[in-house]
Amino acid sequence: MISLYFHIPFCYKKCNYCNFYIIPTNNIPNIDEYKDLYLEALKNDINFQLKRFNIQNAKVKTIYFWWWTPSELWINRLKDLVNLLNKKFDLSNIDEFSFEINPLLSNNKPNDTLKFIDEISKLFYWKSRISIWIQSLNNELLAFSWRNYEIDTINYLLNNLKANNIVINLDFISFWLEKFFDNNYFGVFDNFVKKYYDKIDSYSIYTLELYPWSIFWNNEKLKKLINFKWNIEKNILENFKKYLFILEKNKYLRYEISNFSKKNKYSKHNVVYWNMEPYLWFWVSASWYVSNNFTNSKFWIRYTNSFSIQKYLKNQFEFQEYKELEYVEYLQEKVFLWLRQTKWIKLTKEIKQVLNITKLNQLVNDGFLHYKNKAISFTKKWFDVYNYIVTEILEF
Image 1 (cartoon, one colour):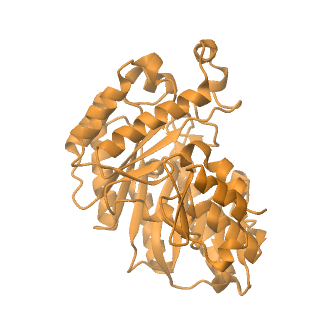
Image 2 (cartoon, rainbow, N blue to C red; image 1 turned 90 degrees about the vertical axis):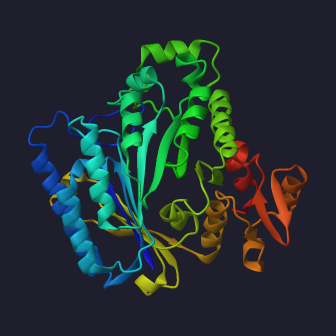
Image 3 (cartoon, one colour; image 1 turned 120 degrees about the vertical axis):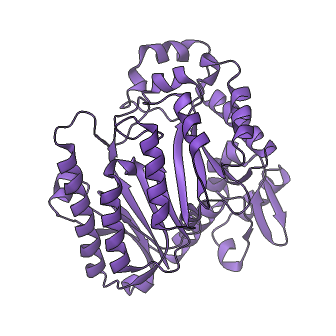
């Protein structure tokens, strides 16, 4: 089985912390025509790639719509795309249909967001997972980040959300700025988690990364905060641990570095990546990760598409191989990605050949890794030094 990912690059506006390419919808004339162009290019991309690889009626495990605001396409365009997927793939046994959404659509009416969620859930009833970008529970911090909603909007949505048989995830950012905007921020977060426990199935907590090309980087107020005895990396970690403590206290299980859920309410699509299962991405510069079942090769291969939005909209797809994984490289990536999860990885003969056993034993003794029944997993210290540990134990 394969999983499908669709990138929708439209956003109402670019947030201060965002360093990615987006198409803002609030200041582009004739934006609907641009959306129609993108949708047609996306459909042509699907047809082109499936023909190129001779993929016919492949069984689909999960579908994911993300980056930046898929709801900007509006429901009719999404239904049009799903109709094509039904013709090109076998969706009869799909495990999960995931959709990222902002609390407000472009027209700033929360009731329209509720209607949109209801329509999305009907596309794959019993299988839908909606992820809502909350980011923060402080109005001043939301405004500082250029989000287009306030806490009242979030509460209105959650209080009126009819989440029957839909998995609901909320996304937050550990800004490290929370303390400056509200000394009791994590008390507010704790109360929020308790209040909506019956409705919210999972949380994603991501740490803010600052880049020179983001608006935040050159913000004068932010510069003053940075210079005010503030160790960014240290406080990002401290704040993240506060999120972690509150979520675990409220019975959300950590199943990956940044993700927490009730039992069996995790993101099935994201697990596809961490387990190194095959996936197809469709959008500008998108990557595929496919096995020899699709390529008649003895290797797992990564492919990438055109990096030019102008070419993409003209249906000039430059799909090309950029990485053919040798078996040892495949095993290295498998260890690297698997250990992001709170799962045990068996130390098979194949896995051992890419590990530094001396370093591994040292990290077990130092309390960073569990070792049991010839398998390893991270202890709760893992997040602090994840990158360090995996680079230490993998033999590159």
